[in-house]
Length: 384
Ligand SMILES: *Cc1c(COP(=O)(O)O)cnc(C)c1O
Image 1: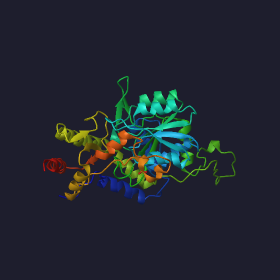
Image 2: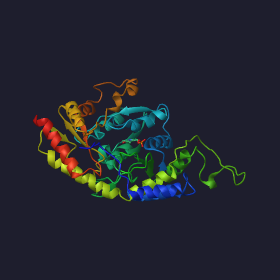
Image 3: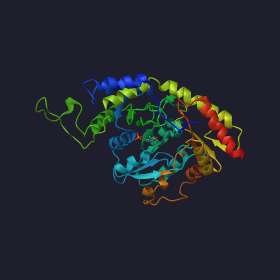
Image 4: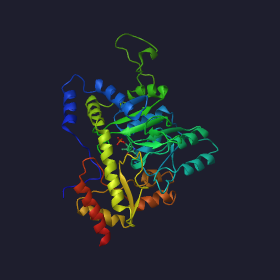
């Protein structure tokens, strides 16, 4: 059996042609494909504005800057995420407050977030970063109501959920990244994510002020709107008004992202089929606990389960060339975050989840035979 990773990109001839076309054009970066990709992506998630950036981490950093995170500010996020969700707060000198997860959904527990906000009499907590972990979209309507009560902003980390949605209290589908409830949302185009661009990221929002600020911050803090320049020396003149970065995406990466975006719905459908097959295969099998079954609107970046004898199982699967993975080591237990006082026992649900979690392979080109091999191998391990 050939190697089966937990996730992988799917590159077609059409993708290759799209990139080659840009390489032979006048613009390698800052060309026309960036705007096209932004517009197509904004329309895909149903947001007004999109800003393409060099990666998801840069997207998070710019968001934290645009929202004004400063030393002394506190921001709440989940420990069951990639560390970048938390690190963006540190880039701006803020303090990360990890809140525990809901043991059924594995998402940030809104009740725990409420407790933290209610205890915050000094009003140091400025924002919340919920993560659509594994592709399951958080109830952003509920988080918005809570955030408004305490004057907080929301960054939706939607890296796992392009094309995903949740159903709000009015019974409407609310797309991940639509900006309907969150102030800003971010996506990543790392090859294991739904849309691959090598590296790449996207910020989506409905807020015009934040949008314009992000455009400037992405390019060194140079004013991108000619009507807002303070001086004008001539045709060569550019004006840096605040401290930004070079977090731009190249034109050929944008072309690749744009080409991949055309197949995003097909990929999502495939992920859902794979998830449904895993669920059906294991639903009555007691050693395995699921992230609450197959959920409408789940984008299935990952298919996470919790198992007994996790370490033995992952080693067994690796011996068969099946590269299941662990998502995630709780961020608060990283040596970097321990220096701020975080320790074992602080977030019991997250830590318990981590002790048994395993991500089974999910990606659009995973064949039925390969998936059956994964399923049979898991059964075989527990039968022995
Ligand atoms: C991948 C990922 C990021 C970071 O994206 P990069 O493009 O790799 O910088 C942030 N948050 C989550 C949840 C991710 O999965």
